[in-house]
Image (cartoon, helix red, strand yellow):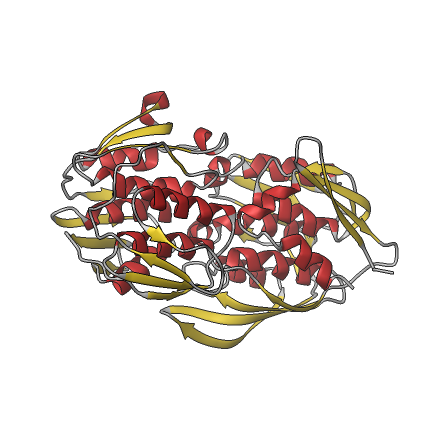
Length: 449
């Protein structure tokens, strides 16, 4: 008999609930895991391939719902993209400045990356009109952070609530270069402006208060754009107009997906996991540093470079965790991993404090409120802070009904927490995991002993 019972049930509204019953004698996690391709890199490979000259080949593309939204939008604007798969996707680009005016509204689904990055490209297409929208969650998420700098460049964009919410209408213009000092460290903001700068005459610069992930810079350079980076001021400059040429892109495993297994391996007694082919770009490894601060037994093995991105296999063994404070410049390098870090903190001795993470409130859900509410339902001691959480560890968790709030990272974080609860945990709207990790629950079932 299996050491744990993990079942999924489909409801009448087609949502799913995941039921995890931890056995009274405990469980452990063992095995090697191959995680899906990096979501951030998958988006950018599809986008740059679509606007480059020639053909781009992508291996290891993430097959989640978000990259599918990106592919659909760019197909609607004239790019030829083969059927999405992990082996090889071919993108026949149409050249910079040649996106066609679509006959229908572009729908980014649940993907903030698709919508925000795409706005930079659409705004810089003179004489063409575009309308973009998303699902209920995306239509409530702030767009002014990219709309305002684009308007400084001369873009014409209209939307709800003072042009801050989708749906958004864009009348393409010949833009002017700017030096934008972003009030937040955000790869989406930075990338949107750099993409707008591709077709803009002159030098467009973005300066951030802290370093955000640099996948756009790496890939833009690989496709032929002229970029300069000043690490002392966290500034990136792109010179336009650029010429982009199709490339071969190999997408490494997503460290945001690996983070669930790293925490699971650390908190479930007797566990040892190896997560293979993980992208360990230094602008994304905040989760590794945070877990190291907590005393997690994590080792990087087989370190190498694949298509310009550092990659490694990561081994994790169960360990006794301790509390720490996570704040400051590390936060932009692990913003998506904070929900699962909160789970680790529940099982750490002492009080863990997470600050400077107010960005979590405008993700697919308000991740500060939702994680605090759902973990507290399970018996944890989590206090909301305006920009984070205070988590007192060492309290035993008890299975109960919890809800993902249709947020993929919440769904997977709660599933990992459920592995160390007493009794039965039911996670409602668990299907949200498919946005970034369609095979997550199958993998979970396979490694439970």
